[in-house]
Image (cartoon, rainbow, N blue to C red; front, side, top):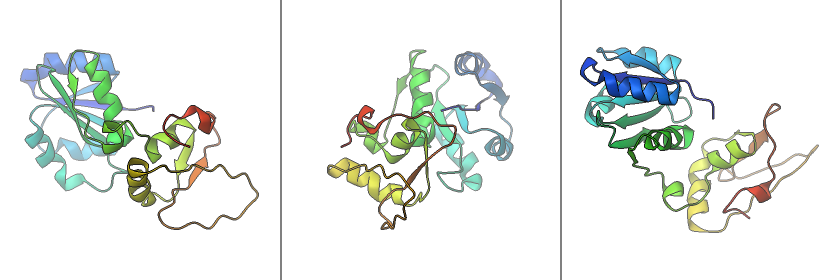
Length: 187
């Protein structure tokens, strides 16, 4: 996943932010009231080097959906913890793991990852696809947690009619092709 990362911080945490930005290939942005409006428009991942409460209150007015909002990862200035608050399946968990390379503990709470199961979003990313019916991912990710779930590959031309709890992945023209057998945890 190619992420454009903003590292937002107060001046007093600048050293930690600089270290993160260098490691993540991101850009340091000093905090000022209302800065998240611009950040949400221009970045697809945000690392906030300050308290989670500040980050949540600041982003609240700009939240739209998990498919459009950037991932938000909060870390303390000592780089002890990296907490994906938003967008775990959309880059947040990946960024938290990259921050862990600097010694932080990644605090991953995304259910599929906690239980070592694949997610619809992760499968789509691995096989170079886009999720067309995004609302379906809730039911399908729950099914991936609770039962064996089949992944079927259908080659066209065909017409496929599906229920709303079936995720439809469409191959990207420029995506890297991976076979379904290469994805752990699915049948």
